[in-house]
Amino acid sequence: MNHFSGESIRIEVEYEPNHCRAVFSKMNSVTLTGWFMKYANMFKVIKPEKLRNELREQLKAAVRNYE
Image (cartoon, rainbow, N blue to C red; front, side, top):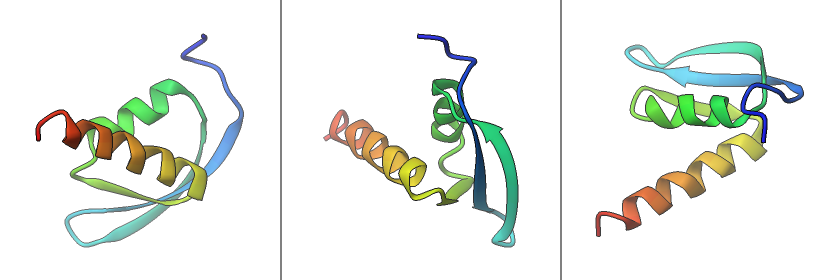
């Protein structure tokens, strides 16, 4: 698996402190998902829905590790 390759996707995020939104294009890869997981307390992925759902499932799995 190449952690540094993938198709470019349009990402919309909401972030603190003022619930600002940003839209950008980034390569969809394991590295991108890991970055959002690292900063999950600061950023909320709005779009694409597929990335949002993937992050949600990973966060649920992480919480189960601490229950």
